Image (cartoon, rainbow over all chains, first blue to last red; front, side, top):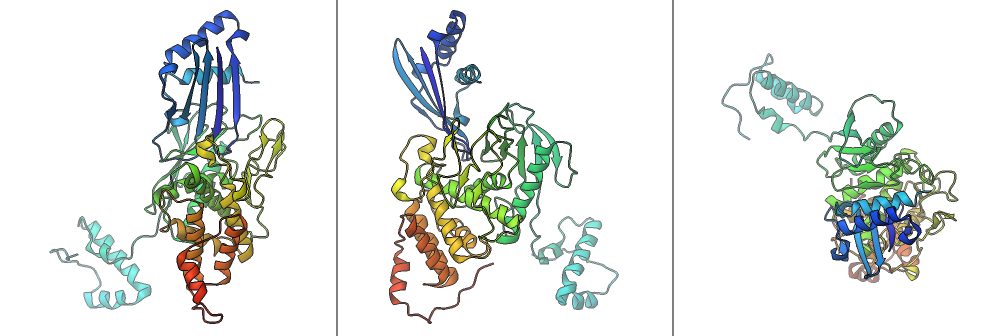
Length: 98
Length: 367
C-alpha cells in the first residue's frame, strides 16, 4: 500500500508532497497504517470534500491510497477533514518529518 | 424619537442649554453631559443620545493562546487596552491587528472588518509547528512555523493585514474562494496587506518593497519573501521549498486543481496590475490606487467576479473618482493591459470616445 499526500494552499501556497510505502515499513507499522486507512473508510469517501467556512488560507490535501484493490484519491479542505481521516494525515506527516 | 415624559432637569436653565447646544463646539459636550445626567437619574434610554452624532468606531482586540493545540479559540491572554505580556507572538498579533484596524479606520473610515466594530480575535501558537496563518470566517489563526523553513506567522504586519482583509472581503464582495474570483480574493488581501505595511512605515510607492511575507522564511531558505507584487515569480527559488510559481501575466495563467484552482498562484496577475497602477500614479499608494481598489471591493464586484470584471470595474471606478481619461484612470487601464487583461467596460470606452481634452470634470476623491 502506498499513501501519498499533496498539501497545497495555505498562506504561502507552497506545495508539499509526502509519500510512504508500507513495503518499506516493519510489519507492525504496516498493519497499523492499514488499520488507520480502514478505520477512515477511505475507499468510500467522496473524491472531493469542501469546507463550508468562508475563510481564507486554509490548506488543501490530496490524499491517494494505492493498494491491491486499486487506487482512490480524496481532495479535502483542511477545515473539512473527517475526524476518522485525520489520524492518517498525522501518521504520514510524522513518519516523513526530517 | 419623542422626549421622555419626565422633565430633564439640569443646573443650567433650558434657554442657556439651548443656546449652548447651538454652538457646534459646545453642542457635543452639552448633549453628553445631559445624557450622563439622564443616565444618573435612571432614565434608561437617554433621549439626548439620539441627538448625538454616531460614536466613532472603537477597536476591540482579543488575543488567545492555542497552546500548540488545534482547539479554538484557546485561552484568552490579552484584551484591548491590556499591557504587553512576555510572549512576543501575542504582542505582535495585538500590535499588528491594531495597525490594521487603524488603517481601515483612518484611511477608509471603516470600523473593523464588518464596519460595525466587530471584535478582532486572534489565536496564536495554534497547532504544533503549524506553518500557516488563516482566517476561518470568524477569527485569525497563527501557527508558530516549523522552525526549519518558516518563522512564526505573526512576525509580519502584512500577513496580519492579509488575514484581516479576508474578513473585509467576506463582508463586501464575498468573492468565492476558487478560480479567478478566489485569486482576486487572495490578491485583495495581498494589496491591502501591503498597503497597511506601507502606511505604517510611511512609504511612498518608490520606497515600498512590494513584497508579501518578507521575514517569514528562516535563513535556511533561499528567498526574500513569500510573494512579490512587482515581480511575481521571483520571490524565492529554493531546493527544498521550490520556486515561486506565480505568473506575472494572463499568458502564464496556471490551470490547476491544486490550491482551489491556484488562488495563491494566479493572484500574481492582479497583484502586478495593482503595483503597476500605483507606481504610475505615484505618491502614497493607499491614497488613490488603494481608494480605487477599496471602492471597487465595496460595491462593484459580485462573488463570481473574474479578472476581466476586476479590470473593468477598477477602470470605471477610477473614472468616477478622478474623471474619465484622467491620469489615474489611464494608470489603471494601462496596468491591466500590461498584464494581459484589457479593460472593456462599455461605460469607459463610450465616454473616452466622446471626451475632449481639457473638458474633464474635476472629480472628488471620496472620503
